[in-house]
Length: 183
Image (tube, rainbow, N blue to C red; front, side):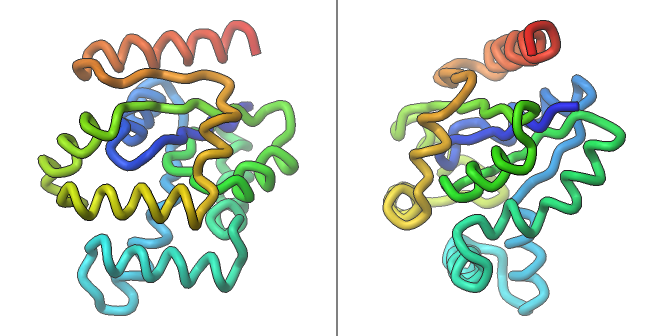
């Protein structure tokens, strides 16, 4: 069984890629669900500001590998029945935690889109949408405070997502085929 983690900046297309992996039989685990659950538990509105506070607090409490640690039991249990796709691994520490615990069955797929493309997508989102300023601030915070660049740099596969959704689907399916054939 394989653990495939999708990495990339907000708006790059990770969640769309995750859906395609799901359609191909992978079970999706979205790291951000932990943030959403905690925001709701606190009775706060789901928005970038509240989500950022919760993300930072969880990382302060559990370390920079927080989301990998908090999701690992779920990943391990799911691996007993299916391949797993992780939507939203962020930090270098999460990467090293999962690489250590999953070894050769762990793969990284980076989904890349330019800031201009991503910001356009994010401002048009109905759910979890951001303004251009919020998106730029999130990029800065994730690169500077979360060590997000490392996992992107270590990707086993990179998909450039400056394309229509049908083209993204073709590229993701190529990666899935390669994972199943070669690895």
